[in-house]
Figure 1 (cartoon, rainbow, N blue to C red):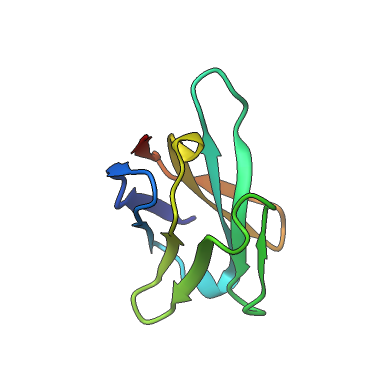
Figure 2 (cartoon, rainbow, N blue to C red):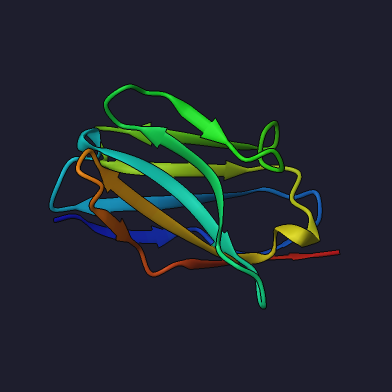
Length: 117
C-alpha cells in the first residue's frame, strides 16, 4: 500500500506558476503510474497528466500540454506538477493518484489551487 500527500497549492494571479508535489510513503513510485487529477466546484474530477514510474512516459490532457510538466524524483519518491501560465479556469482541487500494474488505485487528500484574474 502507498500513502500520498500533496502540497504546493495556493492562490496565484493569472499568468503565474505553481509547483505541486506528491510525496509517497510505503512503496516506491517506480511501481506505479502516478497521475494528477483536478476537480473544480460543481464539476467532475478530470485527468490532468501522468507519468509512468517504470517506463518514464508522460501523458497530458490537451489543456495541460505546453503549460504543465509532470516529473518524478525517484530519490525523493515524489512526483511534481509544474504549472505555468495559469488561468482562472485552472482553479480546482488537485489530487495525486497512484495506480499499480494490478489496477489498485490510491488517492491523496488534494491541494487547493486558486487562480485570480
